[in-house]
Image 1 (cartoon, each protein chain N blue to C red):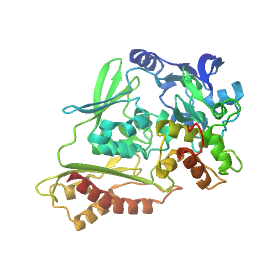
Image 2 (cartoon, chains in turn green, orange):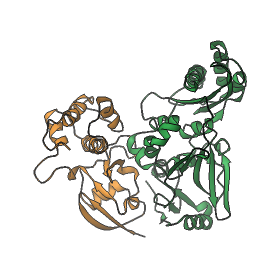
Image 3 (cartoon, rainbow over the protein chains, first blue to last red):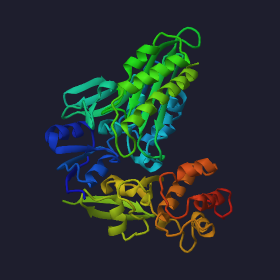
Image 4 (spheres, chains in turn purple, green):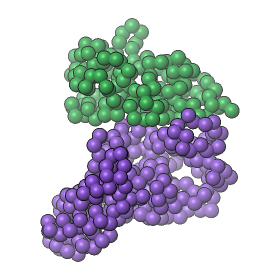
Length: 289
Length: 159
């Protein structure tokens, strides 16, 4: 049962930040509430004060610039990202990822910023954004700062947000030419959280089979999304062969720290990572052409 | 400490005072007596609580009522026009698209939202459209047939 709380619906970002600064640990921010309300119903989170930013103006937008790249306001719904023409055109992997997040109803009300701040290790947006080298703009009364998505999640449900800070914007740089990014979410029932999630971004070098850069990001494979850096090292600057991808998959599965739970054992998750990293890297390579 | 909530439900404006922790499903069922919307799981998994908020399908068990301030909500009670059932409702009846009926309100509202967005969905798109609604009785096929029949225009006033 949800415990009573005091509810504030600030009308400006400054108002929201002032409230956050005032109540610090005693308050929680709610956007769509698609993650927070479930926790509150289970009694896991019982804040005294709720700062409701769902309708805060000026934070729901998708902007694209050929030089600056993509800028997504933190309060943009998953569904809006999924359906955005410019995202389908320039960053299709984001739309593909969003189409597999939960269900339509959840995507209609839940926000991409809320997802990132909730920091569920099985979340889908974070690994994809990391593979795209995205950054986040955080705002507080003291000003703004930018942090790579890769450094944002610290642990299970824990982010680098300081007290008094709000996530304001997600920034995705323009995709380098000849780069393909693919995300694969493995689950048993559509709508479930990922059992493992694999995002691979590959940039071609000379010819069509040499990789000049690669990012392999594993979701639901540790207490936060992780880059399989050793696996990346095996591929970076090399000619991509099946055998090399096998090794990369094997290495990535060893770099991961998956848990055993009701959905899958640690061994099964490692096996999935081994197989899927190879498969998705191949797809990323094909997409890069 | 209650806060004011003003919203339109099925075309009717309402002004209520609710505790902040109140969920939209509670307002609809308890305050407004619209018990067509069902609270199946309470944890955003089953979709039986689906309503349309500003034309979009949402899980009313997972929307803070105060966030629906100023919104237009459509529930299953709002589908029929007087005595005339909505084409989706007629199709569900004709195609046996319900057994116990518990998921039905949510299914209808997801279907309505789907057709709002895409009046001519393919079978795959219909399946995607009801992806967030669980049914333990029918096996879904009769539901898909019913929606397909509406899309094909088998019912007058298609929409």
